[in-house]
Image (tube, rainbow, N blue to C red; front, side, top):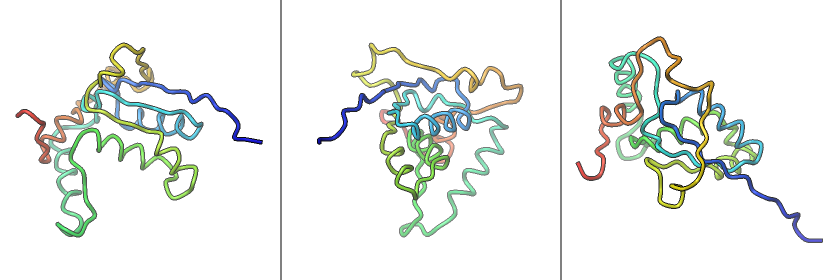
Amino acid sequence: MGKPTTTERVAVIDATGLILGRMASHIAKRLLQGEKIIVVNAEEAAISGKRLSIVKEAKRFLEIGHPRKGPLHRRRPDRIVRRTVRGMLPRKKPKGKQAYKRLKVFLEVPEEFKGKEMQTIPNANAEKLRCPYITVGKLAKEIGWTPIGE
């Protein structure tokens, strides 16, 4: 008796114009069901609220901890999205650890996924918001991330 063969489902999700929290909870649920998920265009995800209050809260969060000992707070947009999804998984349990390993997040669309069909999450669309919002990329720049090439 060998291992049962499983066909791994892979979903490529385009984060452009999606609300970060709703997208992350949807992705976490699918990861727990055994799906492998790849998120592209992470810096285009939206965080609802006024820009100044979001940036102020993020900067206050960065002050927590020792500068060299930790905890380390990531500033790259793909790491922010990945960390948001991690917060919605039971990461200390084995099923949560396995689910988190099935998640990949990219800043833009890698060459290997350019021809593939990309999914979106309709109930996480930022166009439904009636309040102001900021993208994860803009937030990352405000808190100290410098994109390569700038």
